[in-house]
Image (cartoon, rainbow, N blue to C red; front, top):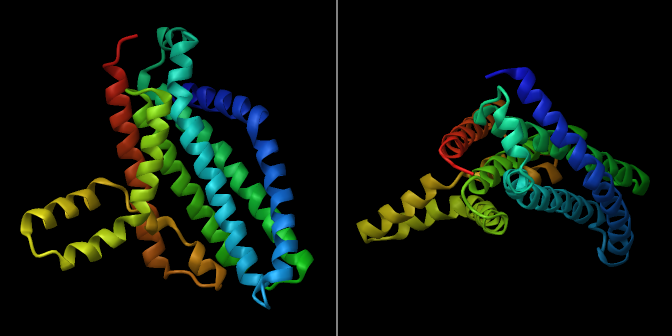
Length: 257
């Protein structure tokens, strides 16, 4: 795999999506966040700090998910519809490089977006005089970028063999199932029928456990898991991303268009 060709594809995606969406999304988030904090101040009953952080972090996560699912699902199909994929792949570029480059570009955009929105959140907290943990929220943001990178890989995987709409729906389904996966473990322990228990465990193993990468609830209280747990969970996310990109590249390599 040629890193320069991957970098060229990623840079092109970054420029294209950045011009179209990122600044608008960040501006929208900033306006919505300030408005929400002002309204919460009137109804929070002394809990403005926690509620403001909850709302801010949830908003960042939701906007990131929206871009990862909707943009990521269409990255491949858009190139095929425009016939630009044929031109790029006709050059000395492998389809794996094409997939990895697309993933790198959209992940970079999501990273910039998350950083910008976190800075806005920090600014609002400082402006309102609300105490918060810089370190906990920063680490939470880094794990969110990793989670969104994983979801981008999911969207690309579905996008290489389905339509953009179906890929988006499936990516959203993976997101919700991924955050529900820990509950599946608890549920399986209460099931008596072995066959049903095996199915539930199979679903848990199939979907990525996104709760490993979700530190929002702990970060609001200034808490974080221990270093060992965070390292293990980050490694889990990276391995899952590599696996998804490898599967996407394999499927895309066999697709004719």
